[in-house]
Image (cartoon, rainbow, N blue to C red):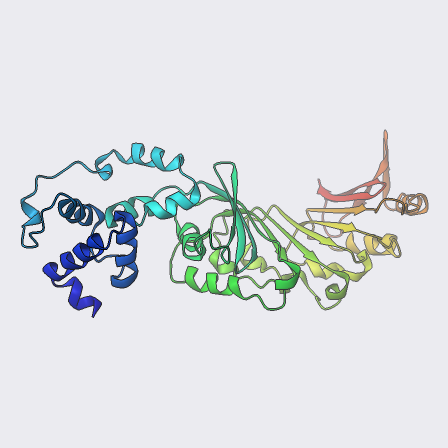
Length: 362
């Protein structure tokens, strides 16, 4: 039915005339017809011509629109000027602007999105940072259009350079949410890779690393709680090292203990940080570090503990035992050096309360 209307200009103009007689506003009429006939049933300039012609009392549907002198359109502006206009618009207004015409849609979709951060909470809820302004979206809010297609367009944009992509799942959505899988499915239809510097994950969130440009990925942070840490034998069950060759740092936040992570957990990730938070356990810390320095592929390992208020830990015996490892360094009482087996390099172990770093040096 819609195809038959679109292919018959006279009938299509009659639809516009009917809506005009009903007293509908122009843009409201245009959106209504787009919903019924499809987004490409007619360009907005042509629709506006017929609507305004009817408003002037001219009801001749046979008039040859092509005889009209060409009017200057906003799309006649230089590309850089038109993009500056877009920079001043709110995110929702950009989405509305692309619906005006096919030409404008093409221009808008090729703008640099200038989105620097995208935070995913669940299928219906996420937020972005655009031009230093944060926009939050909740698709069940009737005041907001469903932003899924807009967000997918942003992620597909080859000019997109995200400083951070993070997953902060809402508690109620962790079990049933599969929205990101739907987004990934859309992204796989494009050859464009996601350029992301910092990626923050939760251990329950599966992610396809093939969608990312490995040359952009500098840092990955993920959270893993005490219940799940024992289920993960190796970190590469969550993060694929093959797609993280240029990674500068892998960060792990956990409320578990260091002894829960065997040294081979980090095979393939030479630079990593573990942040232990909550009421942490210092049991076997010294033994675990002795095992860590037996491995020869580390470049930098940082261990940090963040104690809760009112729950101080006694670090003195830990520090005393760690200072027995390796050889001392003049004028640096809290630093020890440990030779790396089969190499002229050594590990420099910097020991502080609630922070220990192990760095490979020559």
